[in-house]
Length: 519
Image (cartoon, rainbow, N blue to C red):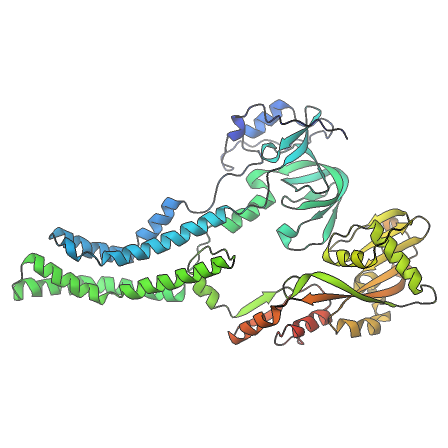
């Protein structure tokens, strides 16, 4: 396809800057845009003016003013301000140093919360890019922030999906790891939805944008991450607040009694009586404890920040210390993301000798894109230049757990998880799979297929097992030490994984996780 490359933006630049609240904007009907024509200038202008543009400028976090207000107007500060006001009223300015403690405590809270706000506001799942888009029948390259709902765009290998879309034609494999954490490639065809924030790692498609800007999946996800969740205060800070509140209430009658005693009974002048009363009341407030608690928490926040931890609320430091159960994944958490192929075990040497299996694997990964860790490990070990020509390719998906290729003169072959390929016939291979899985290896099955994968789907009767391929996960160097630390801290660790339970159990045992055999 020939693209007309230019840097032309929307005709009405000022209209492109309009930010319309999604709750107040005028509803515009979804337009089934013709893929060969796209939107015209008037349709684009209408969508921009009503906020259906691929731009989300608003931040759901508290403003700096709100942060200052929430940290300044506290009961703790109120008590000190009232006492300070009493001293100012009688002209005793030299005794106001105790307000420094209140000011320091307030500053620490404001500093940490503003710092966290700025870090959260920088969170983004979408990068600005030029997108191929058709308008008025002509293809252009348009900045992703100037696209509007119902635009017709093209995505190809390496593109990031900049807004939610529905495929009109073509097919692609996408990586949604930025959204879900799963690195498996997912096949998308005409009629399927594309989620903003995912990446295309194979194929090409023409799609219609269905949700843009703040309505898109990536924006909603980022907004949830940025939102000010109303976290309950930690137990320690809650106890201090209760203590200050009780003391603050009691200070009123106690202060009145002290002032009467100093002024009426001891005969001190008003200024001296106020100074003596305030001095006595200040001693009853544990302001040092409050300040030291804030400092300790602030130090914890700074230490977490140096370790690249995003802290949204100071109270979460104590909440983190109260965690008693930790759930982790296996791949990429206990083990390193990379994998290594250890060996393959022949299952039918008479029909599929070692040379035949090796030749098939070389051709398979010469034609199949290695788009996940397992595929990359297999390609690194087996890929070689091959003259086998692929007639049809079924890419790996997280639902099927296998991939397949039909070669023009050599038939069809499958590689994937044995339990998903063999189905009810898995019992034929269980005895051969179990010993390797119990050693912590991931076991894949290579099989010939006597059927048509595209038309008939996977039929168990057509499967002829060729070999088991053994893959090892490299245990992270710090894994054992980390889990030993959690054990010493009384934190129970649970491993949640989609891999073979025996394999996960053995990897967990190697990492020193208590109860690894109880799966």
